[in-house]
Image (tube, rainbow over all chains, first blue to last red; front, top):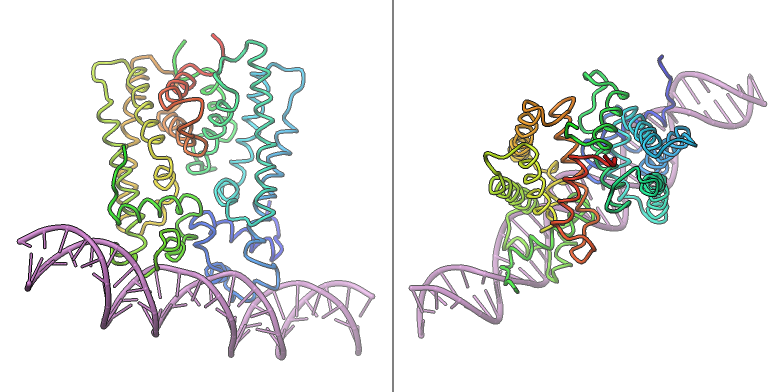
Length: 192
Length: 192
DNA sequence: AAAATTTGCTAACGAACGTTAGGTTGTTTA
DNA sequence: TAAACAACCTAACGTTCGTTAGCAAATTTT
């Protein structure tokens, strides 16, 4: 399924790859232009600023994460099942576009205000979704956890490393990775 | 216990804080000089280049991680106990200096060759230590894990997020954090 | 007391940076 | 067919960058 990208989308995609590889600050508009085969000044026919690209990538990914987790939320299920679903949704988004995910995870701090604050608020709202599940699991006696924030941070950080090693052609597909991670986080490494 | 730092160590420490907050590339020598209350050119009486600071921080932390894990390795113990010890050692280093840890974890990619390659080799050697423990645990039927690389990456990424939220004055001290993380990774969230 | 070292300064270098102005060309729309 | 638009160009702007040269003062070592 070949998709024709607009020039603006091409710029965004190429920039995403560079931002991921070298970081936002270490990527110059001339680097980006060179990668696209045009002059740096030409890029400004399509975007307003370097930061606009970063904003678009960060907030598009934020939306994708929200969409995925809301779609995956199984009401009237146990906390374990809900957590499993949330993990799967998160992993799906991460693996669908590892480059944009990396930018979303590590380059957002180069956003200027008010986007920086807005981004952090979104991220917090997203994490709250996980915290709510953990709280429910604790209340139901299903989970044994010292602190719900602690648990959520640990879970998400375990998931968020995937983008560094995931390859679509690797031996595990996204679904298997999600299943393995959920098992490991819910049941631990130890044989029972 | 007040320790008197040499000027070079002061520069390194101040730079570490800035590298952590804004990233290596987005931190200018003039920013750093300003933070130190001197002129940018004056810094070059103490160091050879901006990258030298990054190198020193990255490799010093690498050594700290190695020292800690070698010291903590309990021979003739079960894989669970060895993993617990390794996790504790890792968390100790992470929490002892969160700023340098953050630089170690995220800014090493701005090292130029051959330091970049050397760093990656060191990191791989460090991870191998964890992989060896996991392999042993699998062989002994102690751990149930789909893939040892997968397990190690997940464990380390769960640990490596600590630096973002750990505060020495917070409600958990380093030892408690290590214990909670080890429990969570070995036994999972689920009540058994 | 002399020598060496540490710590800092001013001035400036060449290069790289993000971005703007103004123009040309080819393609699509009215 | 004229108007509008998309895509890219060259030239250049003002700024910031890492770094060097050369010098001065204070402190420490011999």
